[in-house]
Length: 244
Image (cartoon, rainbow, N blue to C red):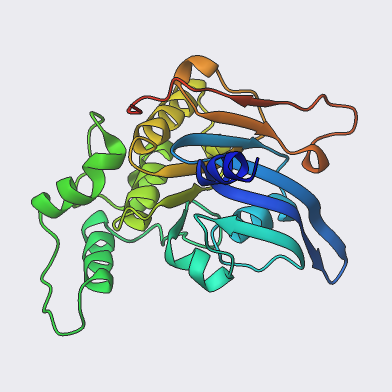
C-alpha cells in the first residue's frame, strides 16, 4: 500500500493538504486540499479576489501558507518551491509600463537572466523569436518597436508569460485566463498554455467553464472560492498531448 501511495504522489506536481492563508481582516482562503497532476495544464475554477491571488502566489512559493502542508515536486519550503516555479500574468506583480517598447522589455529580461559580468546589447529579432515563439506558437509575434499600449489583450498577456518563462522552470503559474475578454482569444490562451504543458506543469485560473476539447489536463473547482450552492467537480484527463 505504501508503494502505491508513493507512486501516486510522484505523479503529482502539487499536493496540498489543509493549506490556508489569513490576513488582517480574516481568512483569505482555505483550508484547501489540492492535487495537481504533473504535466499539462490544470485550470482552477475560482472567483476573482484576494483569495485566488494568494492561492496562486502560495503555489508558486511567493507566499507561505499560514497552516497546512504544501509539496511541489517534493519541495515543502517556500524558498525551495520558489526555485522551481514561475509566476506570470498576475495583476500588480508583473505589470509593465504602457509606454515601454517590446525591445526594451526583452533587453531588460535578457540582462536580468545573464551573469553579472556579461555585457548585453539591445535585444534582436532572434531574441524575440527565442523568448516569445514557445509561448506564441504560430501566432504573429509583436514587433520589437511596438509599445505595450499598442498590443492587444491577447498579445499583452502572452508577452508577459514569455518574459516570465524564459527559464522554463518545472511549474508555471499563470494569472487567470479571463484577462482576455474575447471568447476566441480565451480559447487561444488556453490552447497556448496547453502547448506549454507539454514540457512544464502549467496552472491557471478562471471563473467560467472551459471547453474540454482544448486539451487541458485537469479542471478543478475550488469550493470555498465559488458562489454558494455551485456544484464542485474535479475533471482529470489522461489524454495529455505530448505524454507517452
